[in-house]
Image 1 (cartoon, helix red, strand yellow):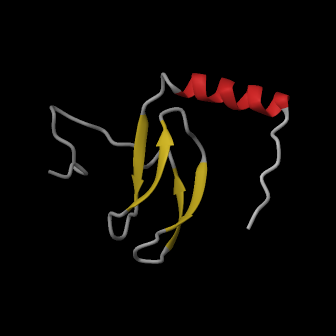
Image 2 (image 1 turned 135 degrees about the horizontal axis):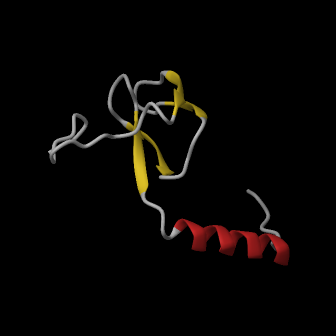
Image 3 (image 1 turned 180 degrees about the horizontal axis):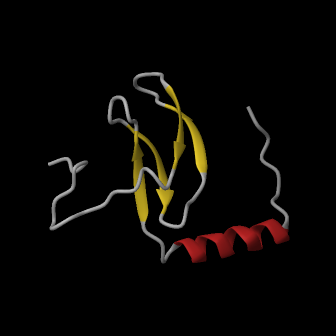
Length: 82
């Protein structure tokens, strides 16, 4: 069991600032390319590469977040689950 320690005031200030900045951003789900299970949720300004392991199919994937954006055309999405 971890002991809870006091967070430094400087860290608390950074956490609050991060939360305020993130309020205006949209969240999107990153789905496993193999099974479609939700691997992670990222904010709209997230960029770069991500190494993730799917909890359902146990595959490890390296994802470029730029390639895994949803592009909606005329109200239809290929990844849309209804």
